[in-house]
Length: 509
Ligand SMILES: *[C@@H]1O[C@H](CO)[C@@H](O)[C@H](O)[C@H]1NC(C)=O
Ligand SMILES: *[C@@H]1O[C@H](CO)[C@@H](O)[C@H](O)[C@H]1NC(C)=O
Ligand SMILES: *[C@@H]1O[C@H](CO)[C@@H](O)[C@H](O)[C@H]1NC(C)=O
Ligand SMILES: *[C@@H]1O[C@H](CO)[C@@H](O)[C@H](O)[C@H]1NC(C)=O
Image (cartoon, rainbow, N blue to C red; front, side, top):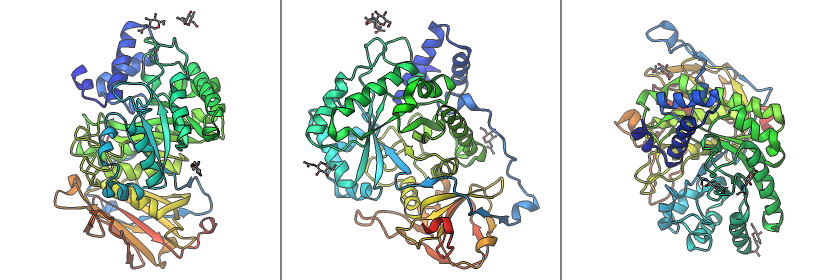
């Protein structure tokens, strides 16, 4: 068990160990004991506590229904959410992963890749102030990173996570002040701050963490600190950045005063542990739907405290524990990533921050790999941002497929256009009948495995063309014009469809 845990992503290892130690050493609540047992059974830091998954009917095999077209209707009268240009963000995961990027910050290739994801939140965690061996606050790396962010147009959210130690349960802003002062003097832009990471699964007894009420006091102290600096006076704070959305911590923080300070209530999500994942985990609709239940819970808790407070998924990926080797960086990972974007959009989440941008050798969940080559999820992210923007609509589908709808991005399409994205995670093709748009012209982006490795391909193909950088530049990523009528989505593929002439009134302004 602990061997297994030992292999996990560093913070989760720490979390699990401390949680286990807590349960053993202290008589904690039944909730936490249950939680711990679930960790033992599943070693999955993401979802154990709300395994009460609604089981949709299983995909039908060898039945006539599977061959019948899926009739999709989109409710264009009501917008469920708004996808902004900051809907997707990503994380740099210092020091474990991101620190290796330091060597490439002036690389034209990296700058090209980063600009393709701009503007975007970049959530920076790491011991920039005090923690050895990354004493960077006065060091060149902090300067270089800030220069890089400005160059590529990334908007930084900085996690203050290394300095909540040894202060008897309350947060002292002394170390944060060093970073803030230094950065203000150099005019570094820091859009937002976060205090602490996943304190809900860290021990309450070793002085390294804060209770929900202490964290709520902590963010007030941070707000006061930022108020001293004109540069950061209007920077926002998010929290509590919990792994779980239990009333004890997530809601507890908000109701203890956190909601008055934070711009968004934040939580984290992984579908499963990378150590347990199998290929079929990535195309499993029950697993996809598990996120919807976690979001419902977070929304209910947050809204019970403050109905207007935005909710963000501030750290998320397919698999924790550094990702699932040979899966999280392959074509198949796109099913969970695209579905996550769809579920979050539909459920009203304002920002989804992917962990991580860059992954070194030991991790497989990066948008790009250690040689700065894009993984399939990078291309999917770029396409999503180019195609989808604005109001989100409810679309009907069928139990064995996933269908999402939103306005088409007016940077690239006429105002009033509609974008659909459809996932077919099955080993059979599925035909879609779109009665509202039967005669409409449409553009199609069909995304399939990039080579003969199929689902585990390192590549993704757009309309049959394997996507790769060309001389360190992005290819054009053009759609094809598709004929009117029904649409067939191949087995194990996902497709964006844009109806540029749809003249959806909510998408016109
Ligand atoms: C720690 O906090 C407790 C409770 O607030 C207080 O009684 C105690 O004196 C504090 N200890 C130190 C070393 O500050
Ligand atoms: C500081 O940065 C802001 C943008 O974040 C810019 O508008 C301003 O001109 C900069 N000020 C100086 C003195 O460079
Ligand atoms: C926690 O802080 C108290 C008071 O400063 C100290 O006596 C105690 O040794 C600390 N515990 C740990 C585990 O560091
Ligand atoms: C999908 O995942 C659920 C929950 O983990 C599991 O019960 C089910 O058997 C899986 N379905 C398939 C087809 O693997």
